[in-house]
Image (cartoon, rainbow, N blue to C red):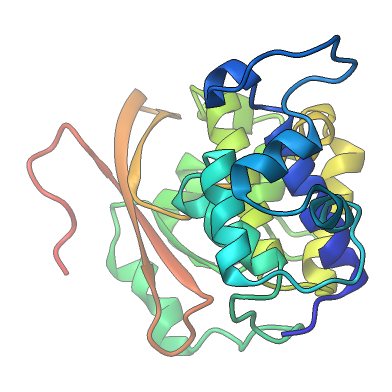
Length: 269
């Protein structure tokens, strides 16, 4: 799959950011000479990956060259990338299928009714770019001002970074927000050139000093189930377990359900 200039630039920036996180000691290389920048030098990483230093430099500079999966896997090993970071690297280099840019399919009435059936467990359906497409009353209570009367569609990621109430609800706001930003980066890489993502990222960078600081660090995360501590308006701090389901009709749409982890059972389904 041909890569766009923006993808190649992001690929180079991602490689450089990961390279700067490693030290010669961590990869078993001797320290030689004075270092003006943190992390490994380009030639050191190229040596570890078994590729030409000049060719790697072109790749990091975002030049129009095609890297094979074999080379990218070698770089992933040399950079000690985890599975999600490796997938992100392959995606940026054009080796992972990316959905076409454009608006996603509208939510069906049947899928939109699912959160209502899960009451009293907070539940909502989000699109690939975190648009809140459907939600129930329990979610509305747990996440105040997530759904407003404004003309722009509600987005969960916008709420986390730009709504002051989010820092009170999310007890561990910083790790939760950083993880969400990492998931947004992974999703944006699968939709190169899609204005839904570029507009959202620009809005976060303009409105949140934390997003502006963290975005260049190129942290990547995949959507997954887990636990988080949330402050309920009536019941205080609760540790919720949450899980996510992709909808059969539209895999980009995700149903997210929360339940009190201290209770015996999850929602029936």
